[in-house]
Each structure stands twice: as structure tokens, then as C-alpha cells.
Image 1 (cartoon, rainbow, N blue to C red):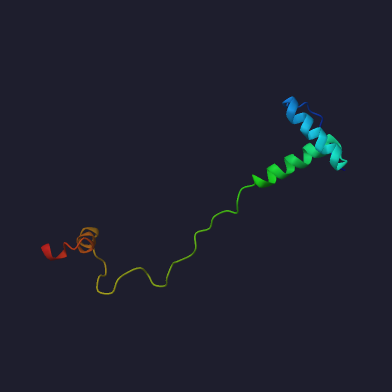
Image 2: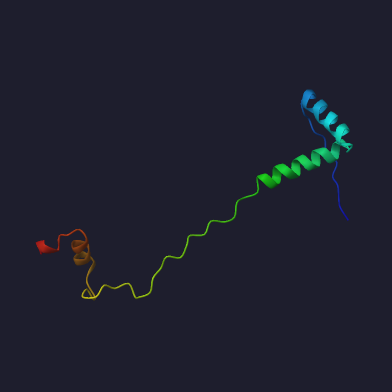
Length: 86
């Protein structure tokens, strides 16, 4: 069973008159026109589907051959091409 709530709306006279005219032209009650407009607006404002970052991982354990168990300072030096300074 559908439940309905009564409420009071304050809208500009010109908007009310236009909406009443449209309701008469469509042959629907004013309240049905307002409910339809609200439903359309709420549907349009519905949040988009949640963003999912694509999985771009690859196999392996993340280590580079030939560089086992290096300390962070040595790795940083290699990344910034400072390895030759040691």
C-alpha cells in the first residue's frame, strides 16, 4: 500500500499557474504532476556508478633480479642515477 504525505509548498504564482495549466492539459491532478517532476529530478541526481580503478597488477614478487635485499638508500641512489657516486 502506498503512503502519502501532505505538505505545503510555497512556489511563485507564475510557476504555479504554468504547472496547473500543464496538469490540466495532461489531464492529471496537480499533485501527480509535482510528484512526477520530483521523481525525474531525483533520478537525474542519482549518484553515478561507483568508480572502480582497473586492476593493472602483474605477477611476481616485486623484486628486480640482481638487486635482492637492498637498503632503501641504495635503491634511492639507483633510481636517481646516483649509483655511480658510491
